Image (tube, rainbow, N blue to C red; front, side, top):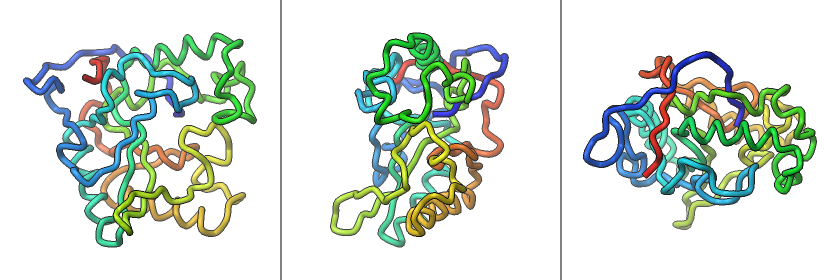
Length: 223
């Protein structure tokens, strides 16, 4: 969940009747075939509890990013594959919560699953936690690949779990099997073709190039 530090204002957006601000969409409404497991809505995340602002398990992106993601999904469906979303838009209040959590060095209940190789006191230094996240701009999404053959979505082996704080999560890491590297490369190439850029430290993290709110950080709750 690598996040970036910068000085910007958190802003609100006009609300539509759906409860989603103007310029944003519910991914599952736009892409019915998409798999969604919003990890910050539940307890299977590096904190180990539901995160403030995630009031419903609803994945939201800007319309522009969601349209590009739909095109990526359509490309994969031709081969019996699809995308699974772990996180999309992230309220600023969630990012603020991560900062407070990182400062509590005694709370390490999810260390073995998500950051076994990193001391919690070093999460800021290594950039895993910061005061601002690109996710709060609404055009960044965390995804993996799933096989849809047999009627059940099965995650492909990417070498690490999502949000694993380690160099093993770097897309170009070579300490993986050939199949794991191939799976990462496939995901990366499909997303790049649809206008996303990847993060060098996280195989699951993609941001739309030319994102519509490049200077704005939102804090509306996911309802």
